Image 1 (cartoon, rainbow, N blue to C red):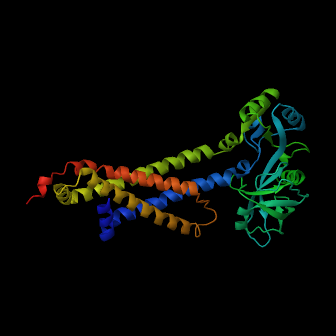
Image 2 (cartoon, rainbow, N blue to C red; image 1 turned 60 degrees about the horizontal axis):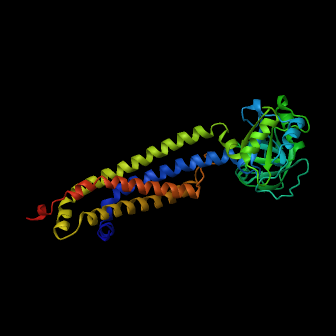
Image 3 (tube, one colour; image 1 turned 90 degrees about the horizontal axis):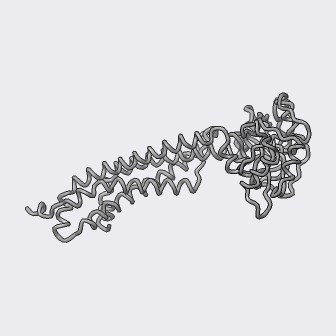
Length: 367
């Protein structure tokens, strides 16, 4: 190990090619992972922010919020089910908003709600014509105190505060009380106009001691199949494109990691071939194959770790220059996971040189 570190210290340029390759691969991996996380966060925030455990759609909506309809009678049936502690109406209108001083429309998911989400105070009260905006809308010029003209009817809505991580389908969360939401929906989507008391979905808080899945099954049984009740996690997965984008990006990330392993494997195979004479001398003076090989593994770990650290810094700097339309999010868990996987693949790549190290004949060093 000390031998490997000593060589890295004295001859760092020998490892420049492998390091540069892993640096570029690190930036690519972090960009892909950041894009995947950004798309996920920007599409699912509204549902993930709910304090409720269940989401109830009408059965004919195919688990789509905008197509679902829950009328007061159906809601009363849901509320009568054992294990249901509280319900809240939920509805969304995906519209544009005219922000003062901005030329481009802001993409808004105007959300009518009854139960507050995790970033709201429990006693939040909004008057008609008031909204809490997601902080992501700052990029579109939204500020507290502004009046935004919302939807095709340009309904005036004043921003009175902020919420966090509540975007829906890549449109900024814009939370209003139900009557304001119905006004925006009726003006912008006349064919989707809903009467008072009717929401697109219900969020359900489960009573203490009750199982979420058991209560979900009981709700669907009580409504005779008129509802489709999902846990919050299931509702997130059912959003359009979530499973597909996760599968696609994950496949690309794993292929890139495999390429990283190949790069390291090829580099250390060539490096080992170049240094066979030196390894033979070490073994001739008493070094074991394990000691020699540990130096190779140490070098692969250090090269991969340093390359990833620099790549993470580069990716962090890139987030400041990427356009707002590119939803890249650097999530700490993703950084750790990517770094660990890159180091593991680098070690596996270095293992290909083990056979050559073990078979080095000390007698070849004589003469």
